[in-house]
Length: 297
Image (cartoon, helix red, strand yellow):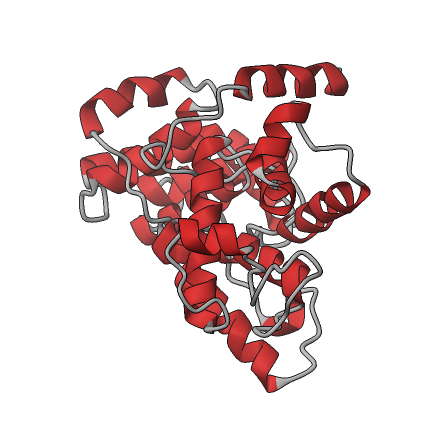
């Protein structure tokens, strides 16, 4: 028998959510009804409404919603961290979630940003992609490939980059080959051209860790430059940010268009958190976004 505190609306929400697969960051987008059901269950655990109070479970469920792009869930988890409700107070993490929601036009989150200060630059643990090798859409042909993939996954969070995006770039660039050299003299695991290696202080482009750090530094820069737009970041990594600026979007190169599609198919999202302090945005970004908006409409 269900406790009396479980009201009919919450009962319906939990029933809807019960039939859903456990959401993950790489899952398909959830419908508004599914996101609402997820929020209702999280709130039940946050406040002990009909279930034992469990802040840790509330955080987990809110974070599932936050990863799926729900601004209300992002606000709720930010509020818990801002007020130390069931977790240690952390204004940086709170600001991280408020900022994500504010960028979606969520006014309460925008207001809260005034009180919590600067967002954390490192992606919170619960927002990081956790992908098992056998569910990684990639068959490793050698133990070396697996080790290099693990190197990419381990280093990516240091640069505020979700491992799945970093690994999508590495796999598409070199098929996880630390000795790869392209016809344009792009080198190593992340296929850095000599100019990019010099730009990000990579002195040994065939040293896997140096090469990955250089590629991640460039990705972090591109994410800030294009304000988290993964389509533009992927196009910039392949063709250079100058080409994206000139063409006000993905350059009309067959290679680049195919490259962007491969990255999006693997990463499965078109936005990514970014650190605005890394660099100013592209001066052409308003025109690029306006052009993208016209194409969608």
